[in-house]
Image 1 (cartoon, helix red, strand yellow):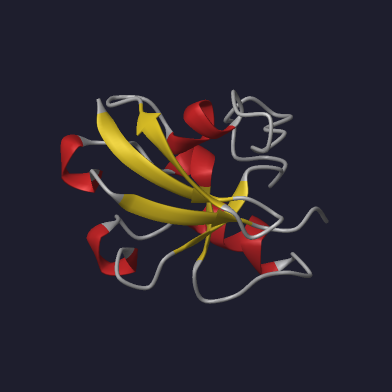
Image 2 (cartoon, helix red, strand yellow):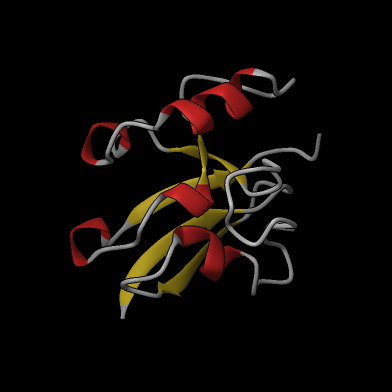
Length: 104
């Protein structure tokens, strides 16, 4: 397994096993401090909103139009905002650091 660094809403960083081949959201929703992921990864609810660490942003594929549209409507949107359901966890993302965004 590859490492995924997750900063929870309390500011505590956790090192967890990332599930290669699955979306980051699928790892985060299984954590007690993770995301709700209400829509199950359909890119329709934004309850899996995270902030990607600046060092990792350029290593991810650009968000598609539907993700950008959902994110732009969020009160807590910033330049590092992504929907974790749209980020496939690959071996190249070993060490990826994300911060769980506040609830909307």
